Image 1 (cartoon, helix red, strand yellow):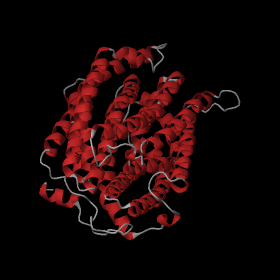
Image 2: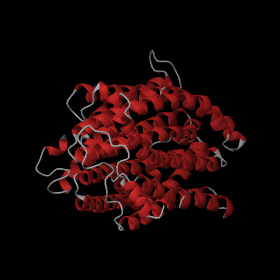
Image 3: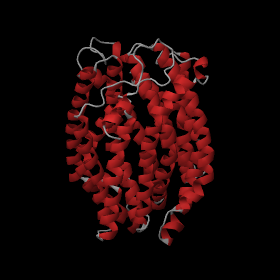
Image 4: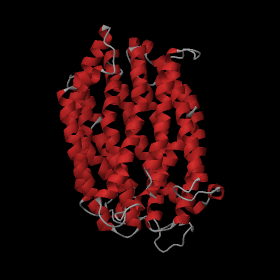
Length: 487
């Protein structure tokens, strides 16, 4: 593992160096993750503003199904981290195998479901007739191709989560770099039909993503099964074990619900946004892609906190886990304050990079997008605090609490505020942007205050178990915390 390379490790010695070694590849991975979306937005923005608007509609609906399986990859990361911290290598490898087989089956089912329900999902979105005619058919084309390739995506998602729990974040980073490079090259070739490649438009962007993700998945499986890196996964580990599956489901279901309700909030917000003119819809999508440049690095810091907390709780070092959380909070908040200043001062030049301004619609999109970025910069510091706190709760296996604060941020701080400001108060698009910013402010403050209660300092594994033994019904910190939290 990378974390054993120096005297300071995840569970021993100083905290700053191991956290930095763990966090920076995760941040790079998240930035590379954003590159997929940015590359699509960049090239489709040169195809048409409607194509960018189609991505605005497609991604929340895609994420709604992705989030179901994504919650169980989170469970894998939590369990591998705590088994690794407890020096239970056999159990870490077995859990990794169980997650791989479980999520693969789930991804295949979701691929079929997504393809079948693409048209009905888009049909429920209320919109102006012009928006419907221009954008929704393009979103349908993108989603159908994307869903057919869904199983090829999840191999890397699982691999990255398992390696993160184990403490090796550099190997997924290197594989992600290869995958992103492929996507950046393939995007213009397939979208515009360069040379022998066919002109596929928005479907070409989906195909480029599927192929590059598939390569990453294949490389990740090779690392797990063939090399010595990461948990010791064998073919035998793939055979379902009810003890481990129960732990995966018990921890993974709240995470899946958290991500699903987040996706549902995105769909609800999109349903509100599409009632405005196409330039507002396109600005919403473009602004979200840009804010993701900020959001995903903070998510990376939160995931580093997840591993730090998980391994230290597994090693029975709760105080060390708590110190790691506060260090991550201070660093994340400080960095994001600097980013917020830049975004608030120079929103139009930033937005203009990703949208050609040759038409009136494109210029209007840039105007709305600039206002969106400037307003949302207010939340950036709070965004970092919330993501670190959610990572701490997940690392402890307390996924119900993480789900609760995600719902506070979205369903208390964001969705009703957007509706009220945009439609009741009559603020229009500006009301949408203000409401979007409010969610992380509310969620970050609430999650940090709750963290100080200390009810999360338990593990979800049985510390007395023998390596490789399943733990059906193991004492759950999540249950204890939920009880004390009055849930």
